[in-house]
Structures are given as structure tokens and as C-alpha cells.
Amino acid sequence: MAKHHTVSLGEETFTLQSGQILLDGAIAAGVGIPHDCRSGRCGSCMTEIKAGITLGGETRQLGTVYACQTRVFSDLKIAIEAVPAVEYVRASISALRDLTSDVVELEITPSAPFSYLPGQYCRFTFNGFPTRCFSPTAALDGSPSDGKFHLQIKRVRQGRISTNLGEKIKVGHSLTIEGPFGHGFLRPGLDKRLVLVAGGTGFAPIWSVAEAALRENPHRSMLIVVGVRKLGSFYMGAALDIASKLPNVEIIATAEEHQTTFHAVQFGTPAEHVPSLSGADVVYAAGAPVMVDAVGVMAEAAGAKFYCDPFESTASETGDWITRAMTWLRTG
Ligand code: FES
Image (tube, rainbow, N blue to C red; front, side, top):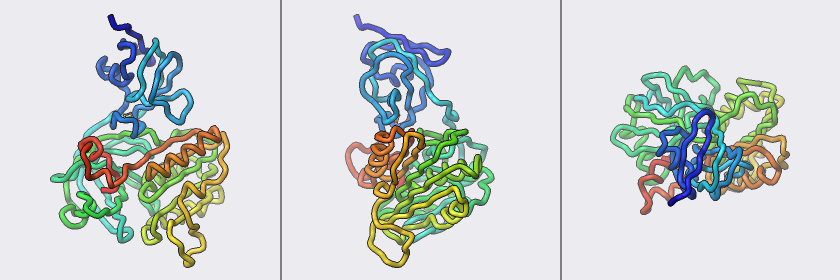
């Protein structure tokens, strides 16, 4: 007969079989552990193991696992961070503009108030098009959002959403939003240095975190490292201009192409320009998984807290493992 273990989450308890995936057991018991991808990528299900033994699903946070990847081998005491409940809301595009030749900004007006934490992402389904995940962010010019969402979407060749922005998907287009998801959100009340690292449109969740953190405490120490592949894709200038006016904010900009026009933009990837970290830092990274992982290794080595939002590559848009991955593309 299979051995069973008891899992305690706050006031709730549930039972699962020895060796069962923690998230599967929670879902079967009707216990709410936030989740999305169920494949160890999105971080939504990060769970702290306060007591007990699990195997697999380790994260870069000591004592924290992906509940969708870890198997339970003893009674457990676990904890999860409070996040807004997942909701569906109808919405429409209220503005659309090209930020560069390959990045588009959408302003989306939901039909009802919708809660998310800065740095979380949602699923957006434009009517007639497949679902994609994007991170709502603050306006680049710092203007108040008034309940509207701003999305920064990279145009990619053969992208089923991005190639249609401004064509079949225009102002007035209807959509649904589902969310929020993800673990790379701003924790309030932190007084440590924030190190925020963004590659490409990974700047969307990073700017969301930065803007909210500076609104909470304009005097907090912050380093923003932001990079693009091509200089022509550098769309973040207005936001960085606002942040750079604060003496406590340092900015490092990078591009992966050699150029001599902008001395402030250094050659290389954002990860290559992250300075020494300390255990007192709180590090966020968003963008290409390889870059996010490199920053995670640095944060782990320094003993810093690390939160991330790795974007799937557009190469995943064609392939066999389709359905789940398709909803995951952040580039459109
Ligand atoms: S649901 Fe576990 S990492 Fe996404």
C-alpha cells in the first residue's frame, strides 16, 4: 500500500502519496498553490519548505522549490507568498504606437479593475489570435496608469501577434486578460539595494518593479542594468531618463553591437555588466533565459535574494511541444 504524507500550508492540511508531485497533490486536494506553466519555468509555484523532505524542483533560493517539480518524501510544512487571485477580465486596446522599428507599446483598458503585483505577467488573448504572456508595466514616461495596462511587445518575424499589431490588431481590438502569474514581483518594504537586470523587452517587468519601488521609496538604492542586441531596439530611454534623475539610482546600458556613437552604451550583454553583488542585494532579472540564468548564478554565489522572469525564445513558436509553450512566448 502506498505511503502517505501530510502537508501543512498555514491552516490547511492535505495528504498525498509518497513520491507524488507537491503541486499535483495540492490541486487534487483543492488547496491553492499558485501555478501556471507546471514545467518549472514560470516560478509561479515557488514554495518554501519549512520542514520535511522533497526531491527535485530546487530553485536558486535556499529552501524554496518549484511545487510543480518537487516530489514529497515526508510530512511537510510549507509556505507560499500571498499573491492576487487569478481572474479573467475583458479589455480593449486603447492606444498602440511603435517605440522602435521592432518594439510596439500597447495601452490596454480592462473592463473592470484587475490586480497584479509589479513584475507579474498575465495571459493576453486578442480576439481571433492565440494566447500570449506579457508583463504589464508602467508607462515609460512615468505618467499614471489609471488602471490601464502598458505592454511592450517585440515584433518578431512570423510572430502571430506582433506581425499583426497595427494591422489586424488595432486600437479598439477586444481581448481577454487572465492572471496574474509569476514570482518575479516586487516585495514591498525591502530596504536593500535593488539590482534590476533586463534584456530586451524584459525591461517591461523590470520597469514595473523599478517604478513601483521608487514610488514606494524614492531614496532607495537601485541599479538598473538594461541591454539590447541592436542599438536600434533601445526603446527604454524615456524611463531611464526619469530614473537617472534620482541620485540613488545607477544605470548601466548595454548593446551587443559595436558602436561609437553613444558612449553611455557599453558593448556586451546585461549579465556581463552586472557588478559585484553582495548578500544584502535583492536581484531581479527578466529577459532571455540564458541571461537570466547567468544573473541567477551570480546572485546565488553572492547569497543575494533572486527573483526572475525568464522569457521563452521565439524559436519555441515552431515545434512539437506546442500548446503549453505557445502560451508562453513573450515576444509575440
Ligand atoms: S507552475 Fe511551477 S514553475 Fe511554473
